[in-house]
Amino acid sequence: MPKIDLPIGNGFYESFSKDVANLQSLNCYPQFPQTSGAVTREAIFPTQGIDKFATLSGACRGMYNFQESMFSVNGNNLYLIKENGTVENKGTVSGSGQVSMSDNGITMAIVIPSGDCYFYNSGVLTLITDSVFTDFQARVGGVTSVCSKDGYFIFTTKEEFFLSSLVTENDGMNFDALDFSTAERKPDNIIRAMIIRGELYIFGTQTTEVFQNTGNTASPFERISGASNDKGLTARFSVIEFDNSYVYIGSGVGESPSIWRGLSKISTSAIDYQLSNLTELELSDSIAFKYTENGSFFACFTFGSKTFVYDSTASAIKGLPIWHQRGSELESYRVNSMVDVYGSIYVGDKSESFIGKFNKNTYTEYLETVDRQFITSYVSSDGAPLFVSELELKTESGVGAFREDIIGVDPVINMSYSDDGGNNFINAGDKKLGKQGNYTKRQIWHRLGRIAYSRMFKFTISEPVKSVFIKLSLKIEGGNDS
Image 1 (tube, one colour):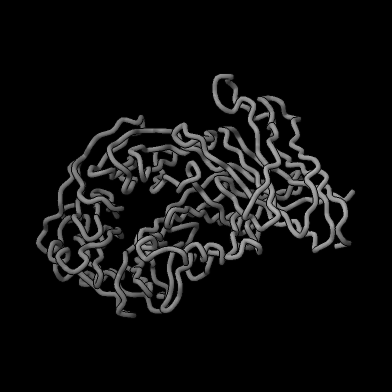
Image 2 (image 1 turned 90 degrees about the horizontal axis):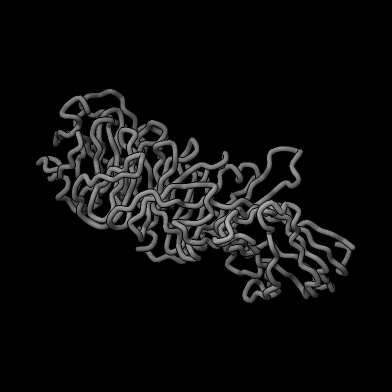
């Protein structure tokens, strides 16, 4: 009786037509062991859980590591969150949207795009009221972003970027009306400024220009000839420096938005299709953040109600873009900001007032369960009769919870399958993963019937236990020689 191993490490790829491909990977991601001694060439690991670390007031609008301390704008306040979890309210911040934050080592700047802007210095938060600054702020669209390079703050408006004084002059909080420049290549609107690999990037709606500090005191930042490109930025907060490059949602003139790594496209047609379904407002509200785990580099993009994650390590090993999806309680992922500080990764919540802490040994989010699910590639009969007599999903067994009074003591995984392109699934039942220490427990489903043309399998686990999937094997009867 033939036995085949079905690939499980392809991540997310939902085609415009589900009959073509309907691969899913929700709250779990592919891993490719880089050794010949592994029992499998691909596996699926669970994404990190979130422990509650602090409670503030209002949803998170942005987080930042300033002077090795964690700061977060939540609701209408700036908070300092200390390593022990205690919180200090540092002052009022207006507005309700995402904020842009940067520092020059002594002063931190906070920009509410098209709104108020603040300096935080020596423990005091103050509104920026400098007359030169407010003149730029009064222009159409106001001040939109801030970054810092070589002791200068660089602020943007729709048409130009302008500088603060050097940090050596009033801690970088002075301004000169002549310290401004414009993007020169094309007259598209500026979206934001960002420092990438030590250079100043000015992202427009259709182009990106790169500047370097030449040391010219009259005009410190000058455009680097040949370093600009014809891709612009779609959403202000959808670009991050990432894995010795940068990734962003963007497009050129006449193009639909895609996700890029520099000038290399990393979004698949499945991700592009998701982007194409968004309204302009949903696109403009897109955000990006990043983190690393177990040697993998993850770039997370939230747009609309969904979060998709690019795994650069898996992509390099596999030789094609590998993505997975994140969700909280089968809804949109609640994380909207991240900061690496105090030796850990902390996250902000877009709907609650929590500050969370990533924990790879936690399998819940703020004690709430998380559904983990993956859907396989198709098994095709090519029109010949094909019967599945047995399916085995090799897992890390014996992972049940250690206490009898909590969920997950005797955890189960559910399997269902679809013969109609994922439009309808037939429940094939649950199998136990094994109580704690029962390391030889196997997960086998029998007598799964006839495949008329093609079939996909879906696996779902909702219990807060370590969920590692190692190999998927099928015993089949019939079919043709192929």
